[in-house]
Length: 216
Image (cartoon, rainbow, N blue to C red):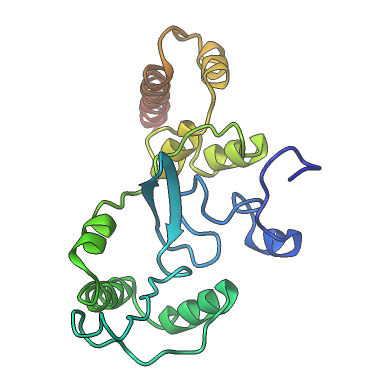
């Protein structure tokens, strides 16, 4: 991070294997985990946003003291602790043969079993988790190539989820530059610029589709 001027938490070797956009960070300012491709969740803690992959960073229950054991339901026997990489590998292997629906059901059952063993205050804190709200980070900016690749992979359209996520990471100057290249209005705040860019791109796709239909 000191040499690159940006926060880097992924080993270069693993980053090359995971590919973009996970060459620098596994889950920070991402919608999917770079390792297991599971959903990323966020919490607010002391005025900061905390990111977590619930597959690679599963909920670990604290061991209750003898004086507290009668207040909580019995805890499962302690297991050998796993490193994040081991936990990710185990989670990936366990779900590899499952359909997406089976994976979702399995995850819901696991979460319910864990939640039953938590105190009401901790359950309330976990219930406040939300999907990440992507933004153009100053301390850990995405590579421009990553954003451009996401837009190209989505066909350059602002209507797909991947392209919409990529737009959220663009800065105001970048958004205005894109609008200017499309001869569109560049005034407004960031969210207005994103909405206008999506509208302009949608209109362009409709024109292309109409032209193709006319040629047929």
